[in-house]
Length: 305
Image 1 (cartoon, rainbow, N blue to C red):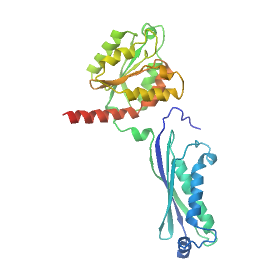
Image 2 (image 1 turned 30 degrees about the horizontal axis):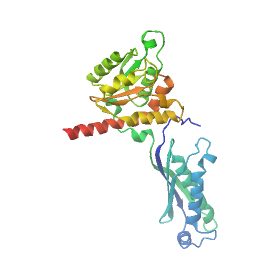
Image 3 (image 1 turned 30 degrees about the vertical axis):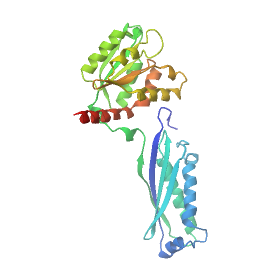
Image 4 (image 1 turned 90 degrees about the vertical axis):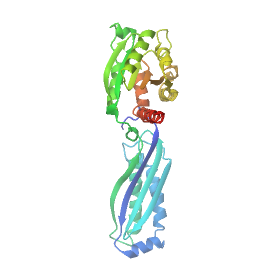
């Protein structure tokens, strides 16, 4: 099974469709008048579809068990065809496309089983996904290619050449996965004045996103948030609240990170942990969803104009 632990929970929706076609009007009449010997075709097949949606992971090996929070199954008659529509919702880390299609398939098969004594030419066709919503693709609502990024590693040991940077390079790779390129990469010591000077310089160069990694902990030399916070024109507390909440589900120590986030001029500044794991998890928690902030900021600037 695909590893979905890095993903965050979002509202996922999917609509699937199947088509059941009969060979004569008498079959349609029997369905509508509830005269099919095996019972009410619509209600029986709807119940079977509900069970199928919930049991998808039991029969399709790569599907993850997930909480099904809404399912709707409807039937519409069009001539000699019955159009089955299945809509499924969940708030989870992975989508419900297969669940919706499985529900549509079993609803159709149940109808076939109930109708075959009356009609030997019942046919199932066009099982397909109609639409889906949710997940990362749904939140890529800003043209990432237009954004300039800078990554700054705050580390005495790396700056002195006594250690190799891993976290900063991992952040750059995560940015690439969101369609973002890093045009500036710096390594600086854990020094209050140097951090502030670097932040002012990069924001003055009109970088859209400036990411500092390192120095968000509790040791004496961990001063990145202390240096950045006074420079922020507008803080966005929810960003690091989301990152810490994401991290807390994976390690009980995430609550110790003191990262801050906000705007310096028009530059979004983020302060990430210095550990590779902490930096990567913070990137997973925030991207690409955080890019929506540029839509909001753009709207605010237009309103101010």
